Length: 506
Image: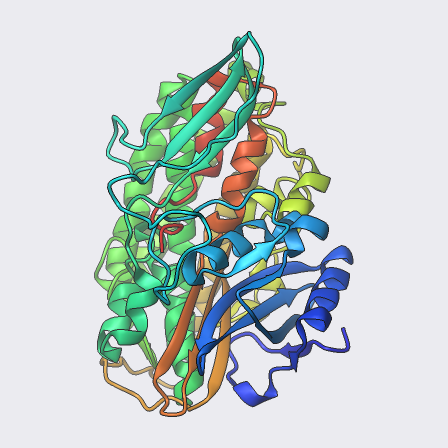
C-alpha cells in the first residue's frame, strides 16, 4: 500500500502525482494488494518518449493508482500471482508487443496489429485473413470430441467463437474467442474532435449507451473543470436506472424462452419495450443516446415527463412482480435454473467477476455504493439474498435489482420536483482539458463495473484513452460455468450472463 496513491472516482489529478516505481516494486505492490482482497479496475500500457509505461488502477474499499516503466519483456503477474491479471496482460501484449514473461496462456485478444507497429509477441503479423490461426486449448483422449460454434451465428448477434471440448455431453473445457470486428475505438478516441466523443461513447456497447457515455462525460468534466447542476445529476441517474431495468427485464424474458416457458418470455419482451419508451420520454431516444453530454444533459424533465414516468411505473410495477412470480415459482423453471452453471465464490474472486455475475457468487461489490457518482451517495443500497453462483442466482439478482431500481427512480423523481433552481440543458461544445493529467471514472452499468481512464499530454490533448467493460472480466466466468456441465446448458448459461461482444472488441 505504501507505493499506491489513493484517488477519487471522477477526480482528475496531475500525472506527476502518480507514483512511478521500478517494475520490481510495481510487481510486489500489486501482488500484495490482490492477495489481500484487492481487485483490478484498469491495467494497461501506453507509449511515452519512445518507451513503454504500465498504469494500474486497483480497488478494495478505496481506489488506488500506480505506474512503472517496462522494457519489451516484463515478469507476468498472472503466472505467479493471480488470474485477475490474465486478460489485461494478454491485451497489453497484443496492443504494444510487450511480453509478460511467464504468462500461462498468452494468445491474442482481438487480432489487431499492435499500436506501436512493432513486431508482435505471437509469431504472426495479425493478417486479417487468418484471424483463427492460433493454437486452441485441446483435451486429449479417444472419447473427446470438439464442438465449434461461430464466429458467424444464425441470429443477429455479434461474432464470437465458442469451442467446446466434450466427453459425450459433458463439457470439459470451453474456449471463448472474440475480437473479430477490429473496431479500434480506444485508438480512435484520441484523434477525434471533442464534440464527437460522446457519440462514440454511446456506441461502445449499444445496450450500455448511458453507462459508457456517462463515464466518458464525467472524465471530460473532471479534466475541464465542469460542474453539473443538481437536476442534471438526477436525470443522469434516472437514465442509468432505466437502462438497467430494460436490460434485466429483457434477459429474464430470454431466460424464460431458453427453458421453453413462453408466457413470461412474451410478457417480459413487451415490458422491456415499455422501459425503452420511458428512456425516450426522458431523453428523446429509446436507447438513451443524445441525453448525457459534458456539463449536464440535453433534455430536462418537465411536468409532463414526470407525470408519464410516474403513471407508467405505477401501472407496470405490479405486472413485473406478477410475471416474476410466475417465472420463479414454476417448478420446471427451478429445475433448469438451480445448480446449473455454478461458479464458486472463491473462483469468482480469483477471476475478479463484477456486476450481477459477481453478486450472484456472494461478492457484494456495487460501484453505486463503493464509488458513488451523480446522486447514488444519497440513495439506499440494494441487497441480494440468493448467491449460490448458479443460473438461478444470476436471475434472482437481476429480479432484485429491477425492483430496487424502480424504487430508486420514484425517489429521484421526488427529489427532482423539490429542486429550488430550474436546471439548464447543455449544448455540445469543446472544452479546454487540463494538461498532463489523468482521471479514472467508474459507474455501475447494468452488467457491472464500467471504467474509463483518460491521460492528457502537455498540450491538454488526449494521449491515451482506456475503456473497461464488465464483460472483459466476466467472459471467463461464463467459460468456468460450463465446466462439467451438459453442452445443452450452454444457451441458458450464456443468457444468464448476456455479455457484450462489442463492449469487449475495443
